[in-house]
Length: 276
Ligand code: C2E
Ligand code: CA
Ligand code: CA
Ligand code: CA
Image (tube, rainbow, N blue to C red; front, side):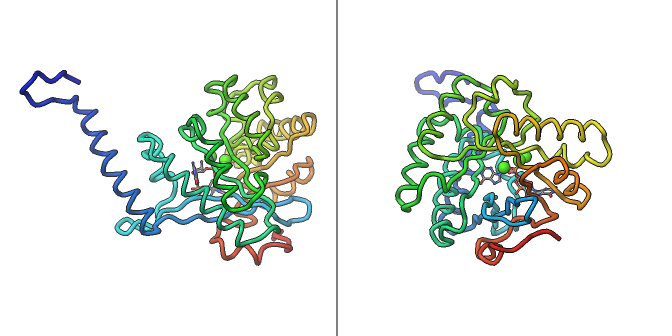
């Protein structure tokens, strides 16, 4: 950016100007969207692969945009992440999950909330989460934070300290998209995590590639050795389910069981087997 001379109009670099404009426009849309209840959470069951039952869910955000129709996260989260607005959306997500947990009652053991890069590194994440959880009269372990491996690996030492504080506060912690971020074993086993989620890309290639068979088996063994639960993402076929059951993978998520559904459908899912 150029420095403005006294008495002249300041000129900004074009990209900066554009992104400032874009941020303002998006911020207005986000504010309006939040005020007018355009955002909605859907919940995907995390299923016990042996019994087919569920008592945990992952919250996934949708935007019912007045002009553009229903938007999926990939369509609006990247620009919210770039502009930092995701932090504001994250506050809404956390409050809405807590409200929903109170409505469902204790049969829903915990809800997983995705934490973006910007949110994870923001100063007051832990304080805010605990305040929101406390305001709703919930125990912190009713909330599970899902943090991607690549976010953690940006600054592993600092991430470890942050995660230790979150763990001590009683929050549950899951590593999301595991297998895509090149973390070392040594790093992994120091993190106070309850589970890691094997990225969908590995499950998808299960039937076509011997590599992913070996890799997934190794990850499940690793989880057992470290005493960390393993969740397989993106289970779509009976064949994939059978393989995961054979190697002793305890939990999974995927369209085979159920896509994310509205909060008012969750009660009817509890206590039933979701095996096809
Ligand atoms: P993710 O955390 O890896 O979430 C899993 C994504 O896989 C979800 O997409 C889910 O609908 C989809 N999925 C579940 N089962 C299957 C399956 O069997 N096959 C296939 N092909 N896909 C499946 P969705 O809802 O579009 O979310 C995309 C990403 O957006 C999420 O990836 C997460 O990173 C992010 N996200 C979603 N909600 C939030 C949120 O509230 N906050 C933040 N920060 N990020 C969110
Ligand atoms: Ca996730
Ligand atoms: Ca994931
Ligand atoms: Ca993902």
